[in-house]
Length: 132
Image 1: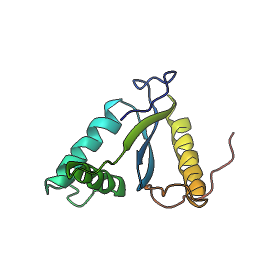
Image 2: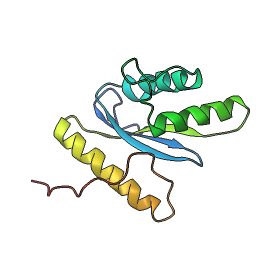
Image 3: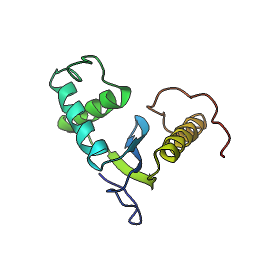
Image 4: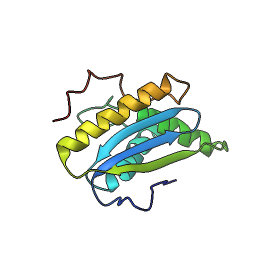
């Protein structure tokens, strides 16, 4: 399910977030609309069908791929599992997009520490450098 605010344009580069009910959240960035939808769909399908992640990285599935695959499998067994994909922001500049992604991941880590959903990204990164 897509929960993108109407003022955001999914065809413009930006930051997205996957939320899996009862599991956690994942923040990422994209340059093309199909990135968060198609790429993850292929990874989930590969995982569920016992195929490798990619030819050069057979064990390259990340936590989000495995979490999405488990949620899809639970749905196939009849469980109601809410999976949402939302575009959080449009950010065209690559350097600004990198910074915003890190800021949002750090924010989700803080929220997770205050009874928010677990974050499925890697652990906290080093502190952000000051904004120029």
